Length: 54
Image (cartoon, rainbow, N blue to C red; front, side, top):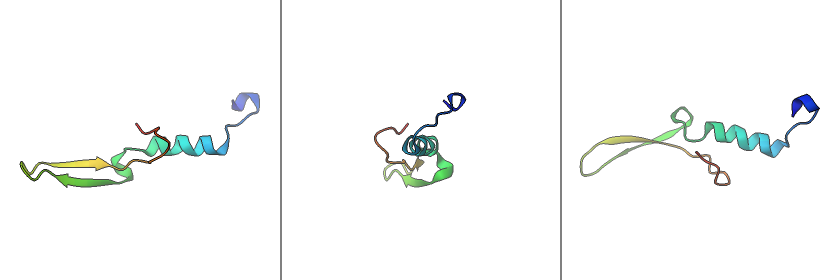
């Protein structure tokens, strides 16, 4: 679109940038442990945006 002299609306750009960070451990996570087997897992935070999360 930039080649045509047009840009995406700001809300679309923000939504896409949040999507790229969604579900990635380097952007925040929880460490959870199974009470029965004591295995630990990392659960990445979601961006919680419009159902577009990966």
